[in-house]
Length: 176
Length: 176
DNA sequence: TGTTCCATGTAATAAGTTACATGATTTA
DNA sequence: TAAATCATGTAACTTATTACATGGAACA
Image (cartoon, rainbow over all chains, first blue to last red; front, side):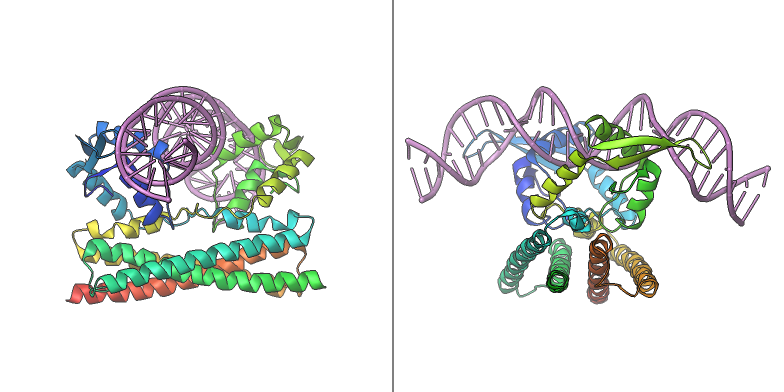
């Protein structure tokens, strides 16, 4: 994320926007981590004055930092490490005494997924009309992020379908 | 997971099998955590002789433990906390100098997903022919885990589609 | 004039990984 | 007889969260 210079605060926004679907980080993790990575020579840092607030500490990766990134990619896809909290919850939904609580849980999940889906469709539409090269002729540094958006859309769509089926199945069970 | 008595070793197997798609844990995390939870009254423990190896320390949740689980579920779905390592890798694939390396990465990912999909189809088929109640008339403690399997199948299918599309798109870009 | 945004952090704690250590039993 | 499985753990370290602390600028 630091191929271009950014502050810790900038990075946080990046996590919340572009990476939100598959990774997150708090400022209280980011700031110490940046210092650590600077100390070990993976990042370079310089200070800039800010229009509002304290000086910005702006970081960029070093050649060594880039090499480490490359090694990480060369190891191949890191699979089997997914963590999806809400699915662990679904797994244990049978513990609820009132079956209607399980149903509300699923409905809440569905509502969130629909919101998220609509948001991603909007982002996609915005990017599309903003750039005639979208999506296949984008420059590399936009093409690969676009791939993760494309998967996000597909997965959330599948998840909504599953929510709908699940809610139907649960209703039938309650109705028995 | 400890509504029925289990040892740390049993739990590990549980993580690797039933929860593998969305959570994991190492034995070196499980053992200390069990002791901690016993100390804080969430679990009860008794020892059993084992046919092979040292005594088994078998844990069961307490009433207090169950209540804590219930509170966790009552908070509603924990969304926005997904962690999917291989997607962060895709996001940065543009860093690779040789575009063919990006392509191999995606092909490796696809191969894994296809294997995983075939495995889940097999599990599903096995459960189906083993129990005439499968999937809609299963008892609660099997119904909800089955839901996570159903989503796993849908998601992986969507992911394989995406891999195929992505590989095609990448090939076109290289061919330019 | 109060809330949000910009911008930095620290401290305490919890969660998770990697490496190390032991030893019996079962399977190939 | 070597490797895998059963079964327990500890130590050192890294990663991540929650709570706390500060203060100016922009906005409503």
